Length: 119
Image (cartoon, rainbow, N blue to C red; front, side):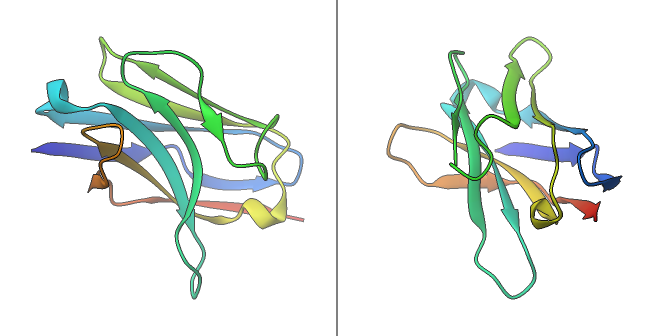
């Protein structure tokens, strides 16, 4: 099993920055990739970014490309989401998730952290 715990959410003004963190514990050797998702009440959870646990570049939804950066520290078993130039439409609960294979579903999820961007 893999346990994920997010932190770093909060309230920020439009144009500001936040850095989210996600700590992984448990059977992290089985992780292939980790991602960030977000959800607004009444809407589907949506993909934000993903990175392979072995490293490399991240992949992003077009809505955050150029503003958000995903990174990981395999030694510390952490992933991060640096969010710059935040917009009110970025307001959501942000979740980190992990999957075990290239085509596997995300089987592990954190509890989420609230990000609120005021205009």
